Amino acid sequence: MELLLLICIGLVLYTYLGYGVVVWVLIKLRPKRQPVADSPDFTPDVTLIVPAYNELDCLPAKVANSLGQVYPREHIRFLFVTEGSTDNSDAYLRTTYGNAVEILGGSERRGKVAAMNRAMQQIQTPIVIFTDANTQLNLDAVKNIVRHFRDPKVGAVAGEKRIQTADSESAAGSGEGLYWKYESQLKKWDAELHTIVGAAGELFAVRTELYEPVSPDTILDDFMISLLIAERGYRVAYEPEAYALERPSFSIIDEQKRKIRIAAGGFQSMVWLKNLLNPFRHGLLTFEYVSHRVMRWAVTPICLPLILLLNIGLVIRDGWASGWGVLLAAQVLFYGAAWLGYILEKRQLRWKIVFVPFYFTFMNVCALAGLARYLRGNQSGTWEKVRRANAVDALI
Image (cartoon, rainbow, N blue to C red; front, top):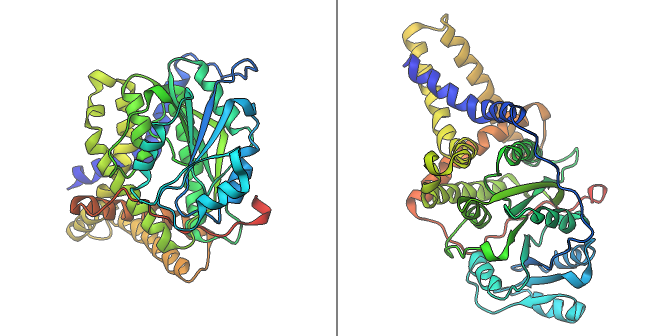
């Protein structure tokens, strides 16, 4: 029991702390990758694709944000994919913006991935950028992303996702924001070492010629599309100065639904991307993929309950006075703080000291729920719109 407990603890520590340290050391031991500079002469044609299922409330701000991008207008197209929408998004876009934006509509709701695959059949520009309708991009986002494609080894570029939170936000929102700051730092290191392992759908770009249509029932289309490109030997670069601003989930229930769906999609993706587990073929990509994704999605969520159960067994055997008793007391305190954070969140109250243990536990519980959902086969590629908190003027 002692050995198994120590192995589980080591795996958890490696996933959330050790991997970052190892990547940082490896970066320091190799020549620094040269930063990508702007080039006024490099302005390839680009299409900005915005999947927008029933997003009429977001469209005025999204269109204005898109048209305001600092990129030569003659080299950028805007394609809004409103397939299946029932909120008159098509009519609004056509009436209000005319030829300024293009629209791909249709009455049948086949899901986001099917709509994206259909949209890509119409793309004639060498680069395509995907962004969500409910996000706002910094005005240099397109310019900053496109410059990476000067390197022929770059097949895709991921922007940064930033969560807008105010002091009065819920624990879930604050935890989500903290998580994405940590995740963004890891992506910077991944990109410096070799390639990032999975783009965020809020903002990412690909070379049109490298886009592979994915199955319509794909849950994490952004993850799959970018990893399929990396599997072919291309780098997926990371551009933190191209970012998408998004509000946190409206409530803990909305965030829970989103996390469980993402976790189910993670297990789906790991099964489909099993070839990436071969280090003899993919080298550094396998190391990054396993350490950053597989460990976090499939290993740590299982290790955490094992650590608690094994610790309880050792305390029963050796007593509270043993060193195992201290570890168990620390776990009880940590999960107690997480439970308190959950209770406060349900009452829309917030206490900063408990939101980190709350969000950490929340993510891993949702991962186990996602595994159960995947094993049941209870998932669909059809768009699932999650409610977001209202905009905060001071943040926008």
